Length: 117
Image 1: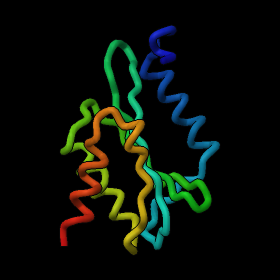
Image 2: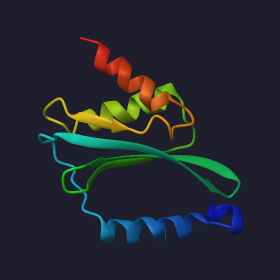
Image 3: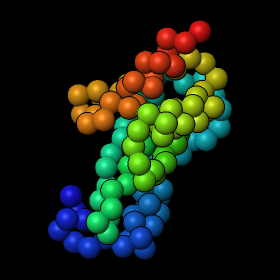
Image 4: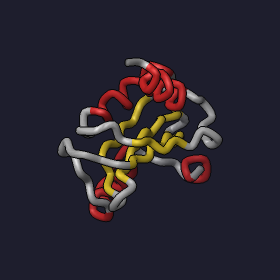
């Protein structure tokens, strides 16, 4: 990771987020979404781990939601996915990379939400 090579400050992360916002379309309105992709990434900054959860509408590469957590577990994943569902009018199909997920919390939450009536 970059932070293992160079010291990363909160100010640097803020600047990266601003640059990221300039390059990516962000859509926060509730609407029908056919296919969305969820990703979780670990970022290490100042010797701490931060877990970045993001979801993108695959049609158009539009960011719907991104959140950073200090822990990664079933409850944080459930909270994130429930918030994502607030931006979807229909039952969207989710893409989750289970193989890349070290902690299967996102996958487990999604499977549980799908199986509940």
